[in-house]
Length: 308
Image (cartoon, rainbow, N blue to C red; front, top):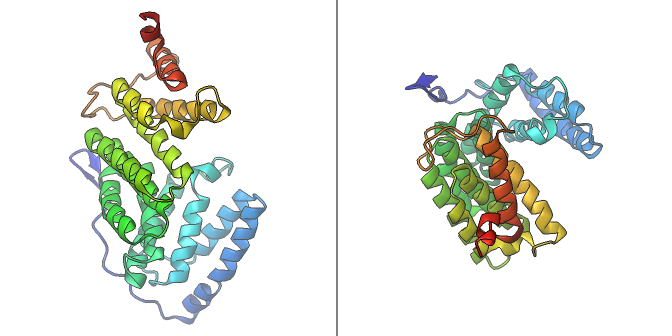
């Protein structure tokens, strides 16, 4: 529904009744085999077939009245992964409003049913909350996304045994806040997540890189170049030494993220209350990319080097 110009989810539906028909039980009992087949398709990189298989299995149920069953929740989570943009981009014909509605309905089902089945401290609910928050953010339901991510992050920090996923929870909350125009809060959350990652006795290096990617990209989207330089000075070792292959790869990943954020940056930004450059090849956009490339390459903009 729309309220004050902002899109929200509809109010929560009452708990779904447990289905007891023989057909429902048969459908549920078939889900483990469906998931095994879907994993085989993933291994063979048959992404479209995997997506169709899981969507067909879910279509036998109504997400509003479906039973709170762990098998169905896991199948829904497999479908949401299969519908992720990194896979769906190669699945021609699977984009569109109908697919998004189907995706949102099943992410909401998984989020609620996992809580009813196992509680919020469970692996199942942590997975479901991650998935639902990502779907909400991707579909522009920013208020609801922030609510879910704010509920998820403290639970993940306390009970999740996978520190890399807790780091991802911090990234997700920061991106949801940024999408909602709460950029100061977004920067605080991503900074906290990176600091906590640094303090972990055995940090997962890819999580640290991802946090730094997103941190720099959020700062770039808000036009906070000086703060980005300070962050890069402190954490740039995660990208590798200047001139290395790892550093060059990190530069281009960050530039692509910055470009995407600059295109979609919310006009109600607390730090940059102006629309982002609308045309990628605009002189301003080109100058911005050049600045960030130089900054990421050696930490010092060309204009600053010229003045020395």
